[in-house]
Image (cartoon, rainbow, N blue to C red):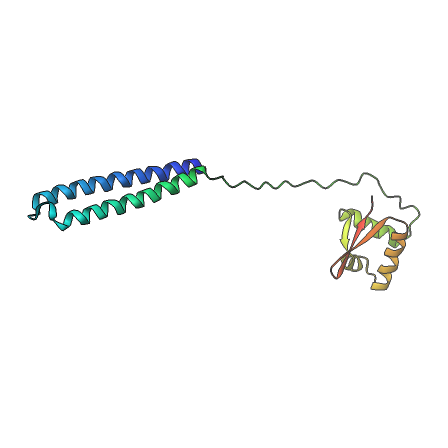
Length: 159
């Protein structure tokens, strides 16, 4: 619900509580007038006045809370938009690459241009030294780029 509507609802509840409190106090005063033998010096009148002021204070607090909610700024909604990843427009020329280099480029294209170096090692069945040399060659040809992520490298296809 909007803050303004909630504020009006709380103010309405406060007004209803005030009406109930006044009706109760009026009825209690009538009963006390009819039954108290001390007249206007009866201690019941002091108690009723205290109860009336206490209930008015509580109702006042409820009204202030309602007004505060009514005029407070509503929290903004967070909207998250997903941006589509741009498709690679330029096809990489693999005619001057050897078999393993072509295979690596194909894997990168299937993985949307980025993959962990350790995953490449497993996929190609190459050891650490072999994958490092292979990536060095492709990096010197400016086809890929290695980015450090903690203890891992991410191999990114340049477009």
